[in-house]
Amino acid sequence: MRGACAVAAMLASFATRVQTQSLTVRDGAGQLVTLRAPAMRIASVVPSATDLLVALGARDQLVARTRYDTARAVRGAVDVGGGLDPDLERLLSARPALLVAWRSQASVPWLARVRERGVAIYLVDTRDTATFLASVEALGTLAGRRAEATRARDAYRAALAPFVARQRAAGATRTGLYIVGTDGVFIAGPPSFVAQGLALAGLRSPLAGITQDFPAISLEQVIASDPDVLVLPWHRGAPRLAELRSMAGWRGLRAVREGRVLEVDGDAWSRPGLHFPQLVRSLASAVDSLSRPR
Image (tube, rainbow, N blue to C red; front, top):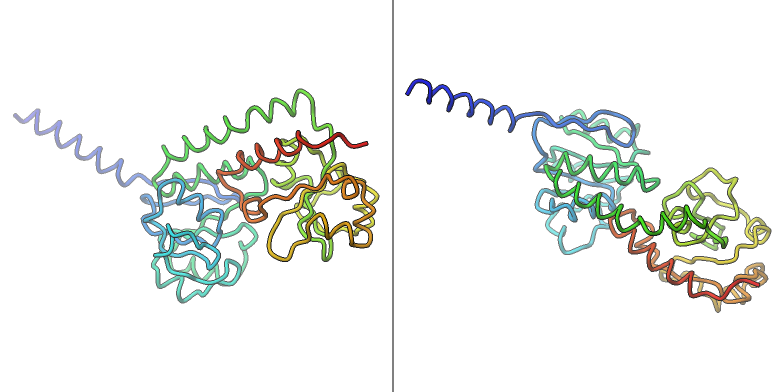
């Protein structure tokens, strides 16, 4: 009997240690983030991270989100306003154990005030597919959703594998530019996850020397690069092919003259997420259906 009691006590002690074992990950800024247990109350000012947490099954753990998170799944969470300038009082009133913020916000004063309240902070870096997958695993761990994160990561890689293999075998035979905006020209630079998506879909950048994610360039640079294809993120007020054909400078582009302008969902492409392989598949199909540039 004493032996059985001793074994039971040992097992109970082990179970307690497992339940209280700390969770440690490295965030997008390279800093260690440690929790004593999975975060049951999470605030996110990064819409793509909010989407990810919902996809991993942590919807009920989200207690605060931005005004841009409009999905029905998160309507019950406190709306803290913008992600760059959240309402700090509302954010803290949600009593989060973990705050997910942008890597670029590492030194903003309000973030220090949140940390002073004992809230753990995870800084997200989603500049490319590798850093996004690192965030999937880390946030899954911190939310107690490690198994779900592993499945999501593996499914993501499997879905992109055919496009990675095709890129390695043949490379991108056409050039393409993702035009973020035409009123002051902004593009998706080669290091960005958006440009990575274009490359996987068969469009390499004609401006390989650019090292910024979303730089502003001149229309003259676009014209000089002479891309085979233009990719336009569609949203209200954005120009479409017919309008580009009437706009000075743009109408002279070979891609515009020959109708090789592809419109994509700008909101979906601007939010790194588990839906990225589907975006690549859809764009690759559209690229493959285009006539060859003359």
